[in-house]
Image (cartoon, one colour):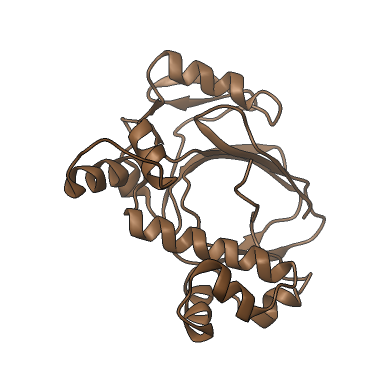
Length: 235
């Protein structure tokens, strides 16, 4: 399956992706992710839509023949108040009604977005209050300076918007960055030094927990068992 993805100028969107369909059944390794998303896929003429929460562990996902997925990964801090993201961690909620052109969200029918008009669709959600953003969460996750608030208040707002604690986000993002470096054939010892792991066993445990691959497997990838979306976060 060929993946295509791009960043976005919208403060509500982390990334937009789509994939071409395949002719035979296969599998893909889904790695941990700190972003929730709106996922749309069409399989043999039937379209489905779901809100997927962040994933805290890797899993093997079957790839159906002739399936064409598309998705909008939302930025840290963006949330839909009517859908508590914490309850969707490692889970998903499907739209109750979907046609070839529209789907239901918060009791209202919306035209299906596309890879090219994702920003316009998100702007519509923002205008009517379906999608909101907490700038504090965006800053906290990015390690920027934040107002003088208690640690409990900050943690509560991070969890409400992302479904994850600040510590969990950092661990997952570091593991994803480590996986990217290893796929670029950076030596494990150097990855440890760059990303602040204690030692190589610490790196190995992180990769097993969040990526489902060893350092050797990442440096010598198996094309028959691909990983889900991995990308550099720098825009």
